Image (cartoon, rainbow, N blue to C red; front, side, top):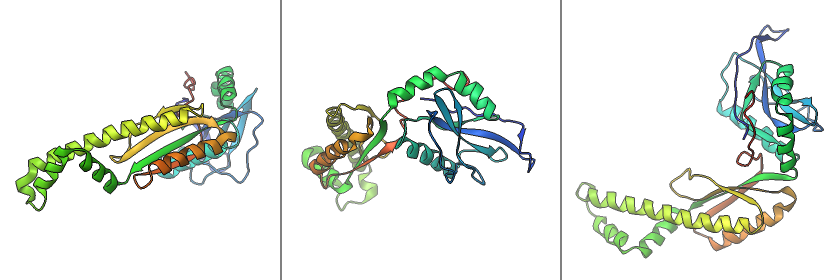
Length: 267
C-alpha cells in the first residue's frame, strides 16, 4: 500500500500570499480525465487535477498549509475521490495522502522515481476494485443462540435474574466473559464461511479485525467490477442463510487499500 508522507513547504500563492502545497490522493493511468466540478480537501476546496509522467498520473489538488490536515471532512473527501475513481479506473490509493511542494515535486519525487512500480501495480488492478463485506449480529438473536447452546450461560443467567446487581457481581462478570468469548468464536466461524464463499468466486480476500463487539464478518475482497453481480448474488445467499441473525452489507467498488503494495513515496 502506498503510505502517507507529509512535508511542510514554503511555496506561496501568488495572489493571496498564503503558503500552498500539492496534496496527492492516489495514482491512476495517465489517460484519466478529471471532472472540473469535483473538488478535494481544504478550506476552500480546490479542483482535482492530474500531474502526469509517462504511463501514470497523480490525482492532486492544491491546498493551503495554514491549517492541519486530517479533519473528518478531509478524510471523507479523500475517500470519496478515491472510491469514485476506483469505480471507473484502476487507482493506487494513498491512505491519507502525500503533501509535496509543487507539481514539479510530484512529478519528479513521486512519479518519476516510482514510475515502473506504479505502472505495474495499476496493470494488476485493471478492471478490479475492492469491496467490503461487513456483518453485525442481531444482539437478541446471538444472545438467544448462546444461551440455547451453553448450559453454563443458562445457569449464570438464572443466577442473576431478578437478583441485586451488587450481590451477583461475579456471576455477571463471568456471564459477560462467556458471551464475549462465544461471540468471538462465532465470528471466527462465520468469517470462515464468508471467506470460503467469496473465494469460490475466484476473488482475493483479506479479513479485517472486528471494529465492534457484535461484528460477525468484516472482510474485503478484490474483484472484477464487471462481475459485481456475481459478488452481490453470493452475498444475498449468505444474507438469506443468516436472516434475522446477521445484518450483512456489501460496499463497493472502493479503492484497493487492502491489496496494493507499493513503495513509500520518497523512499
